[in-house]
Image 1 (cartoon, rainbow, N blue to C red):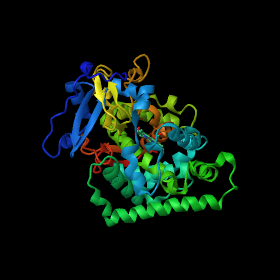
Image 2: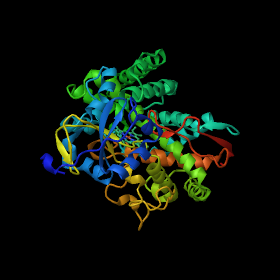
Image 3: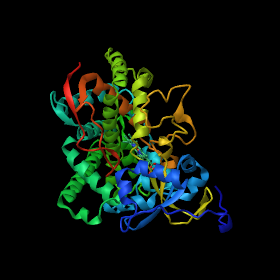
Image 4: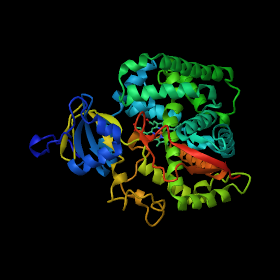
Length: 455
Ligand code: HEM
């Protein structure tokens, strides 16, 4: 990568053939991961696609994943344009995921503690209790359970309690609807803008604002009463607002306070749902996981420090599912300046996709890449450790801030679900259907049979 923009040494960037009007939208909607991998094989690490009249430059593969974390990548890419619609919809000035440079550092610093794994230290048993309650509520014995929806309720229950202090279950439907419309229309732009006039969306959005306002009121009501170690993400955001309103203005509070749901709901619900499928689909893996979780929960309190070490197969299954079913197939960016990537000139202002998940599907990194192999990640294989090979949580300055929290949340939730419930795919040879909007993951009609309680 360099700044040499001399056109005599540059390659021409190919445009992927599409159909009139739609461009490549249908291929991308059918399976974005496969589409990017196929294009990478055919055209190399840089190509252009057209989606509903808009051209995007795609940089993909190991080279692109590494570029994201490089100095050059940080200087050449920004996130603003893709999140601007969301920011305006909330009447805010900015959002963590949509700013870069110094401004981004400041916001990340404010939220680092609240989103960290530390924020759930000493609370694993609480997470288990929340999970048990959700199982009793939404996973009834004998029934076919819609997995993604049930997981969405579980996630709001968990994130609400852990990050914000209370589980706003009465707002789950509104949060889900608001996020669905916002991600589809304003962020990934897979649906037309007029949908935002829909009364269902408007009502849900108003309710999410009401929830944000309650968080603000609640903070003021308890100001000065909390011990430092009891403070959560909401306290940190509100304190930043009081101390440095120029960094965290009042206009940005609702979007920032309800941010954990936008960031965590679809990502965790889609991933955990996919894990239910991959594990049930592989009885040998399922049996190994059951042995691990029976051991883990044979004592009263969960071993917090040794959690992952005690669940090597489940950990492998989670990593393997996130490789094969990444929720962030590509990251969306804008070129901040003219730059050259792999011999291709990219012009300032070009809208881009960075296909960081392409290596997930390449045999050069993962032998027999279609195979669900939970032992890829242990030494000496450690296939994910190859440079640029594994990026389920993104790359570069915007790498998921909730990553280490999500890892615990996912591992503990899945451990508890497999420990408690006797589950089965129906029919036994069921093949997962996928959705791509608003985020890639199992289709909403994916159901499993709860045959009974194991414990
Ligand atoms: C399966 C679970 C998850 C996955 C796969 C995931 C993935 C990602 C990815 C790919 C990004 C980068 C987006 C970009 O570069 O444009 C991101 C950002 C982010 N994620 Fe996650 N995420 C997950 C769960 C969570 C959870 C549970 C939280 C917290 C509640 C969270 C909080 C965030 C935040 C705050 C950002 C923005 C970081 C920044 O812009 O600096 N994520 N996530």
